[in-house]
Image (cartoon, rainbow over all chains, first blue to last red; front, side):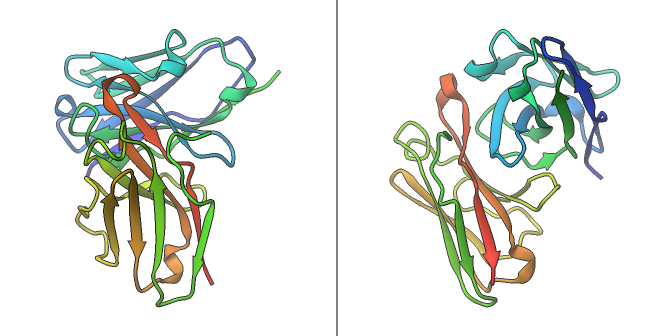
Length: 120
Length: 111
């Protein structure tokens, strides 16, 4: 069965960084792309960026350019999303989601979400 | 403010049909046939319901259907059931620069 399992909740202070993991199982990891989507409390979904699980190339939403880094480890089928210079507005649930194509395909499998709270 | 515009809420009685609209521009919804719809229950991850405007993943009931006209995509749910009560989000490819945009979400209430 196909799964994306994310790391646990995080509490960070403003200005710090957070690194969230997303471990894939049940499919050929390098054949798919992983996106990160976040959802602030009571708000809608916001796309952050994409990583090619095979080649490692990335593309980030303009809003997060310079603050987000997505990496992958093919030996453990895990993708990481690191967000730096955290501020209170970054408090959200962060989801990883899979697509078969680079940007045009739909997100067919989602992780369970990771709550990141930014508070002093 | 979200890139795609959805009504904040819609409602319907069991057995009825409801339609949720998703309005964008010629640079996203109107320019590509890559619109998808997601259902999200409280505290849960989104679930894919429709992709490529009108295609249904296996396991999604045929009560769910999608369409598009110009810059507006629509999700129609027929034969409403209590378990359909959830938030629904549309999503579109928006070109290689903007990439992916979501709607603000619509809360469906089954009366």
